[in-house]
Length: 269
Image 1: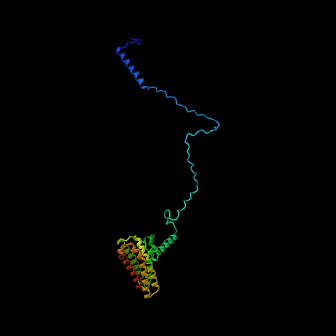
Image 2: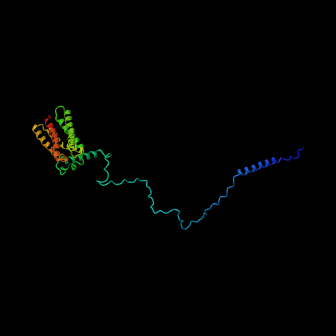
Image 3: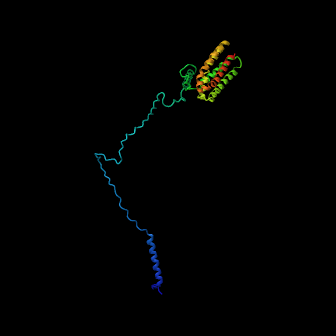
């Protein structure tokens, strides 16, 4: 058999070859994706370019506002607002004021309260008005001054005399205030302490006079006058703070404490 001779295929082999070619052609058509449809044409925005400026301005696409323009910020500091008039606004800050201003304000308050408590005035019958601006600096000063005066008058054991006088006055004021509150008195605790301390001013004056005049008769007269003065000063405030039926229970301990101080002034030599 020569190379030029062709051998006919079997019919079954020919059908197999045709089936393979069909499968190859089908796989090729499936692997190629279908072509995308062409996108629609985009609308173009016409733009007119003019070299010369137009006479009338074109309308703005934004809405116009009728608000006034904002003020320009200046580099200079804005001045502080003026202080409020007297009697209005918050209380002034006393933490940054000079020390001398604080001392003058406290001294003026002490003098004002002393006039309202010890000396005759139209507000004596109303303790709320008389000691509305109460303080504890005045009573503390009068208690310390009385203790120092008694210690200077003593010839021996000056420190013990001062300690006894200070303890008697301080503890007595606290006990008398608690007594008034337990009796149903309508008074503030520290306001009562302030009142009892200011009522010691006449006894301070009496102790100072007795230290300068070493005479028993003069001491007795001065102590009786100052004792009556102190009791008269404390009477309207303590009596108006409690029920009229309990007035004696509130005034008797006060009078007893002032009498004890008067005996100390006379006895110390």
